[in-house]
Image (cartoon, rainbow, N blue to C red):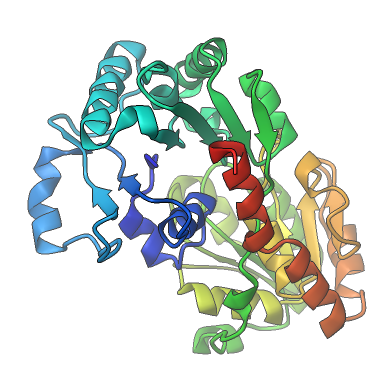
Length: 364
């Protein structure tokens, strides 16, 4: 399994919060699979010094489970065909040299690697589309070309939403929605001390603070709700300028990332949890929606196809619409019963999702 954008160490740092992190762990621990090779994204040789100072966490002590680190000389992710295609063709050859390729399925979250990998050399190739990365600035054309190319090559596509697999256009395609691990909620920390000091009722967002978040909608929400509420956003800041105006609102608190267990505790403690996405992200299936509902939270979210019908505790708002009426309605909902929460966790647990994912990739 060749990761994209996020390393194994990144996954460990956030408690395997993202789907490829969780899949990597499940593959590693699956005794029915004789050999698993996990490949980090391609990184620059110049980063070896940093890695030597801070070694990557171990993947496994079992020699049949290996973690490898491919390198190239240049820094950064290639954004053009002229640069990206040679990089990922070299990666494909390098990965084939690590395994018995004709007996091995290549799974990757990187569309360019899926597009250029030698279809005849591997037992099979699967593209795991857990997000629509065309939305990353500068990548739309490259990833769009990759989708067309891998579809023409009849690469197997496993996506988290129907819209993602439709966008790719592959003949062989399966939808396996995102999931949670119910056991993550068994030993949740207390909320951080700073969270207990937040004034008023809390509308809570957890996740990467980047350009997909509808900051205009959140700014309007903050002004509508006034001082009786605080909007709390917690996560790694990826685009400070995007959030500058929102951060200036007196009842908005933006906090750096916290450990996963603390995040789950804050989700459960908040009055309402938010998924405020911009229009144009409709192919996404934000994992946080499952985590919010698994915590028993009331949720207000931008109306994305993947969220429809998930739970009566999830109120959907058209993209660009006002969040305020839905937030007030969600805050008035009765608390979720333990039975409701347990049923949601059981239905959306990784145990069932992984079985479907493995069937679609390995055929058993």
